[in-house]
Image (cartoon, rainbow, N blue to C red; front, side):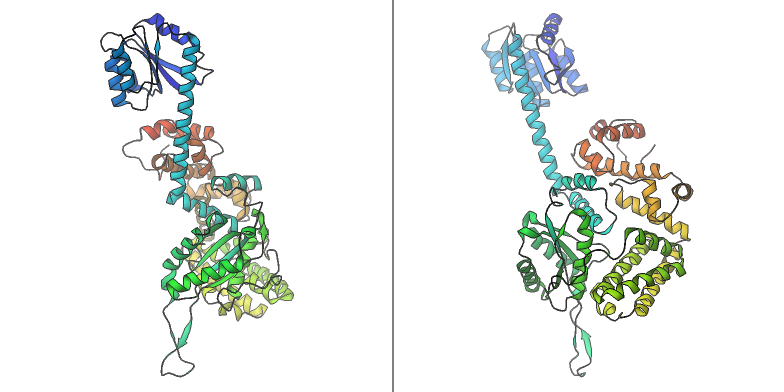
Length: 541
């Protein structure tokens, strides 16, 4: 409700104004009264007010001085002047201070109601304009862009949320309807090349100007190129593979061959390197985006020439690894159960090898993604797995189950040694869990889901988490969410509903109650009067 202050030196007139309009039905609330301009200024200094209804002829500070001070100190106030004097200088003062209306006593109920309704409509419009401006500023902010890209990476790499939850979050990032249209994934990157070393024979090589040094300009250039494609194109970069940039394109709106050719031409013209580009088949629905992402990675790796798309119909559809098997392998790796891990991957490799070479390569990539991802999470180290993509001949040499299995076991052993250097197996599991929470706090997380991710019993995992972290899972998750929420309160003008959604709280009401319980004040009051020294990194309880 909008707040109204009534100012008149006669109490019966103030009471009469209260009774002449149904303030509550209009969405208004009379939050105070004052007998003169001085008293009214004191109230304005101590409480928020949207509309002031004021008399002009008052003691101590009359209406003319009061209006002058209101306009100087509170320019956003809606002012309504009521007086029994048809005096020109009163009207002139009201006009000078941009009063919204000028009414004569005795005020008719219908006139007052009409004026208040008009002011309420103006305030609604101004609030909507502010909200739109805040949303626009938010969408232009780097934080919004990073969160949107994080959401896209989540869609293509992690276990996805229920479809209804995905649609709600997609709407927040202006992706409404993207689950209802067919999309294709495009992967682009620069490959290292070798050229003959002058005077040292045909077989001698020296590395030419390395594309690795061009990763940043390549990323900036491809993002700018994606921007020229408008709303039909989304772009993301998987932090695990900094040499590659990925595009998601609405298939019906895009000439894929032309898009790839223009992208290759743009990069070659500016960087002197022709990129390698691969793209997936069409995918409909968020649940198939993970499949499309993997297909484009595979197509990129198998492309021998720049901008060569995969042959239609040759890539087997569907994922090789199930979500359940992925969780099992991750848990076996983190806990160092090598016999079971090796047996499981060999079984999968044998099955893929019996289907096709393409299927085997696809599986090897998935297993490397799993191994490197588990290592990066658990040991908090940067696994240099991008080498797999930038030097695809590594994978091409793995032409048998034995070679592929040995390669993956050695890679897993290397990652495990890094994890061991950071602590025992259970330490690694909990470190992985906390990092997963810190990266995914905005989603619908629960203890059962997290325990299942590592193949643990929920009750045991709960006790283990509390013993290692010193806080229960829910307390830790709430602390992370609240730290991010206070950051948004202090650095953006987003409303409480948006902040609650962005930080994983079920709704604004629950967020507000949790916030007040933790900090002793409401989110709105905290935003208006933040503590002088406040860190949103570790909320105080």
